[in-house]
Structure formats: structure tokens, C-alpha cells
Length: 346
Image (cartoon, rainbow, N blue to C red; front, side, top):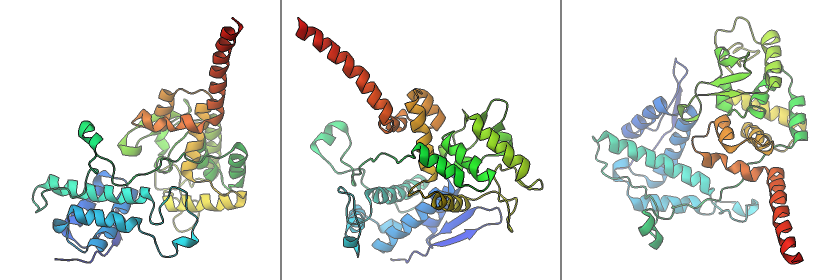
């Protein structure tokens, strides 16, 4: 039995966006995701599952591991016109390894849900955990289906960050950027801030719904709070019906919460005015955390500031802080050279 996935997007009266693909089991999974995952995650799952089931042309109950492996091969196969695109030396001519792994994760999550239900014909997750190796027999895990290279995130130089801040036309846009650039907040965390989350006396911000649903109270530079005060006094509509901190300033949605798409448009326009080749919201966050590490902030404190569940996620900033790393190396190298010189003098 085959089915043709048709991606449908509906915005309900409560503002929640629902996705469906036309199969009861898959649609039930997407509804389940709406209650426990972020909107961007649900949207990505819907697109990734559509790509897979369009390729295999089967219902979920009939999918095998062979189908999954064939799908991986098809995703990594050269695309039409790939010869006209400049690739990284370690990249494949097909989709990026990160994209393929994300699609496999979506598929694995679907089958994990179906197995947990226990009322379907699905009895096994067809997504292999990894390929068997001799070493895997000892470690109880195999080689990953798709290998990826962990690249260092890009950051902004001080001159670039200053140019971006100067390019904004409202206090609101500048305050949003400073929350990421000076506080290390994620885009979704900034947009989710409420008026009551601002702790002016302590110069702190309460993140009520961080990644994974985790909460944290983080300090932010007084510069941010000064900019925020200008926004609240001069720009934010007094008749706004929402308690969200950052709202639309004009147009038919005036006073309503600022959306992620709206913020992306603001950032893109400011980046062009500043003459920058790159300046995404996540790069602003990376820039903040990198500068804090270079200034001597401990990894444990940086982990709390960033809202990372694992310190392994924070350790990437050891490599980003090139000046700090170079200074640490020079200090240690000088000590080693001094010992060596003493031995030679003997």
C-alpha cells in the first residue's frame, strides 16, 4: 500500500501552527510533537518526513532498514548542477551530512513514538543505530550512518558588531540584538521574553522557556537595560494586548508579539545596511559566549549563562577563543622553555 505525502500547514485560532502529511499515524505524531517540541522542530519533522516517505513510497508499517539505507544514499547522491557550486573539501555533492542526520533523527523519533503507542503494526525501529564494527563489539555501539565534521561557529569581530548595532533604526531592534550579543540568549528566548521576566534591579533576565523547556536566570550588561528602557518609554505601544516584551511597532499587527520571521527580516536588512557578509542571530550568541570565555569566564559559569545541559556543548568556545588559547599556550610554553633552559645550562 502506497500513499502520497501532502504537506499541509494550518494556523489555528490559538496561534499554534499545525502540520499534516495525510497519513493518520504520521499526523498523530506531528500533533504529539506540537505539545512537547518547539514550533521549528515540528516544522522540520514535517518537512523531513515528507522527504522520506515521498522517496520510499510506502506507509510507515512497511518501511524496512533497507529503505532507510537507500534513502541515505539518495540524499548523498550528486544533485543536478552540483558542479557549479563550491563545496567544502570534506563535503559531499549531495545534501549536507547534518541535513541527512537531521532527517534520520526525525524518522527515528516517529518510529519511537509508534513503538511507544503499542497499538500499531510497527514492531521495530527501522532506523539503524549505526553500522557494526569490530570496535563496536566492545563499546556496544557502531559507526554512525552519516559522518559529520563539527565546524567551529562563526563570530563577529568587534568592528562588525559595532557596525551592526549602528545600522538598526529602532531601540527595539538594538535591544533585541544586545540581548543576544551581550547576554548570549537564543533567538527564541529573546522573542519569548515577557515584561515580568525583566529584573531591572538585578540587571538579570529570566528565561522561562529555554531550549528543552529549561529555565534560567542570567545576568545581562547594563548597556542592554539602558537600550531596553528607551524602547519601553518611547516605542512600545501602551495599548499592546500582549505581555511579550518585544512587539510589532507598526502595521496591522501593531502591538502583537514579534515573530521569528519578522526578526529575521530585521536582521537581514540591518546586515545589508552595515555591509556585513554574515550576522545571524546565532552568530551573535556565539560572539557573546566567545568573548566571555576570552575574558576569563570559567566553563562552568559559561555553561550556566548559555543554558547548555552538557558542558561538552560549552567546550567549543575553548577553540573559538583564539586569543585566550594563544595566551594560555604562551604562558605554558614559557614555563616549559624555562625548565629546558635550566637543564641545558647544567
